[in-house]
Amino acid sequence: MEILRIIRWQDIIDILIVTVVIYRVLLIIKGTKAAQMLIGLGVLSLAFLVSRYLNLYTLDWLIQSFWAQIVLALIILFQPEIRKALAQVGETRFIPSFTSAEELRSIEEIVRTSVALANRRIGALIAIERDTSLKEFTEMGTPLDAKVSHELLISIFHPASPIHDGAVIIKDNRIIAAGCFLPLSLSSDVSRSLGTRHRAALGLSEETDAIVIIISEETGTISIAIEGRLQGDMDMGSLRKFLTEHFIPPRERKR
Image (cartoon, rainbow, N blue to C red; front, side, top):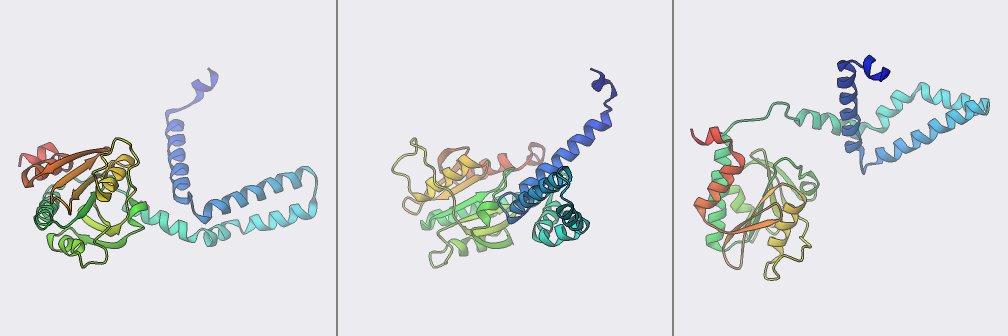
C-alpha cells in the first residue's frame, strides 16, 4: 500500500509509454537478424556479470572495451531495422483521416472495375486493408503504390497480365501491391464448390479485418468476404452501399 501512495500519475504515463515503445521495437525486430543479435548481446551481458562475480579480469576488460563502442556498434548492426522503424513512424497517422472525397472516388473506381470485370467474366481479387496491416502479404506481391483507378485495375486483371492471378491490395486509397498471394481458408464449413479465389478471400478475412472483393471467372458474380463470411451476388448498387457503409463515416455520407 505504501508503494501505491508514492506513485504519481506521471509515473503511470511514463511506464505506459516505455511499454509501448518496447513493444513496437520487438514487433519491428521480430523475425529479423536483429532478434538474433539481441540474443547475442544478452549472452554478452551475462558474461559480463559472471566475469565481475568470478573476478575474471581479462574477460572483464575485453567486455568493458566492447561496451565503450556499443552505441556505434548498434547503429551499424541495426541500420536496416532503424531505417525501417523510422519509416514506419513517418507513416503512422496520429490524427485519423476523415477525407471522404478521395475515399468516395476510390470506392467508385473499385465498384466500376468490379462490375466491368464481372460482365467480362474476368476473375479478380481486391483486398482493402482496414485496421489490421496486410504488409506481410504485400511484400510477396509486386509493389505499385499507385492511385486507385479503373484503368489500372482493369489492366492488372487482364488475362494477359503476368500478375492477374494474384490479389490487389489497397490501403489508404492507394494500390499498394498486385499479384499478392493470400492464405487459403482451411475451414470445413467452406463449400467445396468454391474455387481458389473464394477460399483465398475467406482465408484473408479469417486472419485479418480486411474486406475482400471476389469476381468469379466461372459465373461472373461479385462476392465479398468479411470476418470469415461470404456475401454473394452483389450488384453495382449493393457493392457501392456495402463499401460506403464500411469506409465512409455516417456524417460524411449525408453530404
